[in-house]
Structure formats: C-alpha cells, structure tokens
Length: 204
Image (cartoon, rainbow, N blue to C red):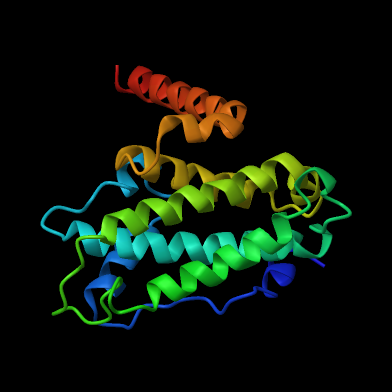
C-alpha cells in the first residue's frame, strides 16, 4: 500500500474552495504552481490581495495537508508505539477537530466575501499554526523512518518546508517554538542557501 492510498483515510474530509471565489483564486495561485516556483516566493501575499483571505486559504490548505500526513501514520501512532508522547494520538485528533470547528465558524472565519473578519482573527491563526507545528514535530521525531519506508518522506519535507517559510515570513510563531525541529530547519536553510549560490553563479 503506498502512502497516498493510506492518506485517503483522513480523519476529516478535505476542505475545498468554491470555484469563482476569491479564496479559490488565491488557492490556485498559491498551490497550483508548487514545484515550479520558489517556495519563498509562494508564501508572499500577492499584490493587491487581502491578507486575511491569504491567511484563510493557507490555514485551510495546511490543515488539509497535516490531516493527510497524520492519516499516513495514524495506524502506528498509539500510546504503545509512542510511549514518550502517549497522548499524541488523542491530542492530534482533538486538534484537527478544533481547527475544523474554527474554520467552519462564520464568526471567526467569514464564509462569504462581504463579511468582516473579527479583531481576534489573527490570534486564532497564530494558535492554529503553533499547534500544527507540533504535529510536524511529532511526525519527524517519532515517525520519520516510517514515512521514509512508505516513500512519503519527500512529501512530508516539501509540506513542512512550505509551512516553515510561511510562518516565518508572517511571524506567526515565536522562534523558540521551532526548537524541536532545529536540525530539520537547519538542513532546509542550508539547501536553500546552496540553491541561491548556484543560481547566482549561473547568472554570472
């Protein structure tokens, strides 16, 4: 069984954007060119677009991605297999439920384009990304070998890299929160630095 087929067993149905809406267009712009565009450029707010809508699109997409990633390893993520973090399975499932409730709550996440975002909106965005980061940390610390055996490590790495640059660009979390993923982050930054050097040499 490949990791995509295992990923079909998500706890929550994938959130989609209605065609013709601002969010649908932003989602296509943000994620439709993955692989062909530098991730650093992808996270930047498109010129003339609303930041709150940009946060909404990326929050929902990263929720979808983490949902799939966790579904891949959910069968092996138990209190027995993860004794040091025995509460992880329950925590992650409750977290996904909580995020779903937030993004479906019109008082926090407006469901139509004429509605205003509440003053507390960014506070919720920061809370969501802070907690999604913990899921990535758990998967890397306890399930990376399994992800690699399933051929899903590249998928995990690309998702996390995109997530990392997004939260750093918009300063959505304290840098101290990144400590558990310090070694992973270091590799990502080193590879990006190497890529930039190669590009600059080609231009010369």
